[in-house]
Amino acid sequence: MTTGERLRIAYSPCPNDTFVFDALAHGRVPDAPALDVTFADIDVTNGMAERGEYDVLKVSYAVLPYVLDTYALLPCGGALGRGCGPLVLTRDGGPTDLTGRTVAVPSEKSTAYLLFRLWAADTVPGGVGEIVVMPFHEIMPAVRDGKVDAGLVIHEARFTYQNYGLRKLADLGEHWESTTGLPIPLGAIIAKRDLGAPTLTALAAALRTSVQLAWENPEASRPYVREHAQEMDPSVADQHIGLYVNEFTADLGPDGYAAVRGLLTRAAAEGLLPPLGPQALTFP
Image (tube, rainbow, N blue to C red; front, top):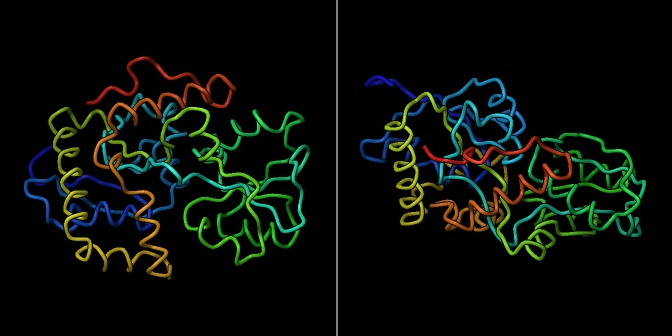
């Protein structure tokens, strides 16, 4: 990377990402690489990663086995946590057993979907029925209106699903944590390996500093969060940040890496993902 060159980065407009990247995106981290930011939902950034289109991306951990030849997993900046997993929802009076049932999901290449399939393997011995992929914002209305039997939801839907007359059939995070004792790996920050070790190391350090600055002065990030929160209620945005920005955002650490490897290994054993190489998560 040459002096003055900007890194092309894409991450979501969700409050946790704008909170984390605010200081870095606005030049408040000394000596940090400059960024050229694009906003895109994670299903879009997953595709960007598979095509190798950007220097740095926020992606689902579920896409890592497909892209780690080109990209390195950064040890910070992503979303892992406890008590923040995806939910399986049905309408009031809906089914309590998903055997043969139709389930709406936002993506089949997502951590949420992997957690759903691992949960179903443990708890739905007859197997679920048809999987219907639909835009995230359409899932709760579709469950409410009886178009599908159940829906897999993430993020702020944890706080709003009761407004649709829905009930929680399963908390996939609780299932994951009770069976592994590990946090839930949700979103990862990856950067192209060919940027070179010095740039990757500098980027990780700058990202850690950006997280720390956001924690030290959360008001500084508030305009950036609000600008991109898609009319989300400010209190919901604050809850969102509180759930998804935590010690694993600052540093994956041993438990974070164990969670990532555990999820991807279990998913590979179920035939949901290709196996992960022994050095695939090495940084840089």
